[in-house]
Image 1 (cartoon, helix red, strand yellow):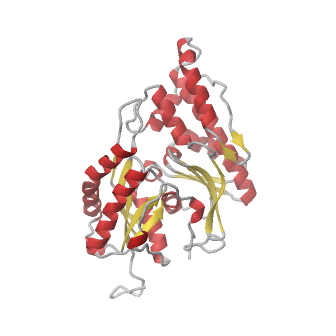
Image 2: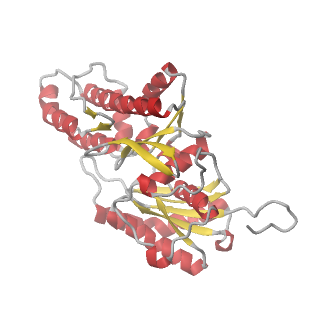
Image 3: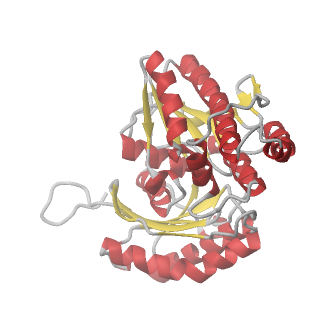
Length: 352
């Protein structure tokens, strides 16, 4: 590694990361683990509507150059200060992924910098570890597109359990559409606020299948039952949000605890957009305390999709020799967490 003039230490590595796998567009800059900038722009649709890949891609195309300039200005860095350009390779929505990757590829060529494709899920994990200081935790990764329980072992982030159908965030988002809840700042956040006012727990299906979970059945049930429960005044919208949250979060806590027991872990790290939910953090904290374990979580700056998490994972990969040739800089909607070789940690999980 190059030496900095007048110092004995290695030259700092500065990585810029581009994230656009869903409706959040972010560009972040990391220098040796320090977040220099992390601006983000969100595509928000009207209440009762989701976001389509084509429209989301148009949003990213319209805003990405402004967000890139914000990132450079906030970090007070110039293109020549960047050592590597990282981008989300997948998983995610095809059109938004490609729209963001095109800009990352262009920037890398214009600036004559190496390019690096990053797994979105790995980005969440590495950013969570960096921000919280968790050493070797069991990871609960919960978002609109993914639900996985993960632990590191032998150069891979192994998946111990996952959803067998839809993600927990997708379940919450789709129920928000039933109640016509606002998407600003996000449907999940607004469900969380309504759930705090809920007083009645409605009995809902509980879909734990060994180490895996299923959310499609509970969603279908509450979608079908919601209107009659509201019309008959057996429940309020707040009661329904409360009941859905309590049930799906209990499922997640159960499979996370089982993974902790299997791994002998005393740490659990919650990452992904749903990880911002304070009730999920509270329920996980109760379980962890009973086991003498500790919960680590981040706030909305880093649990929600952002460019800095891609830069952080890219930083870890780049310093251990990873580079993506231009010919291989494609995107994929399906890119599992356990497909990535984790070269930056040793067999015990310690950093290399």
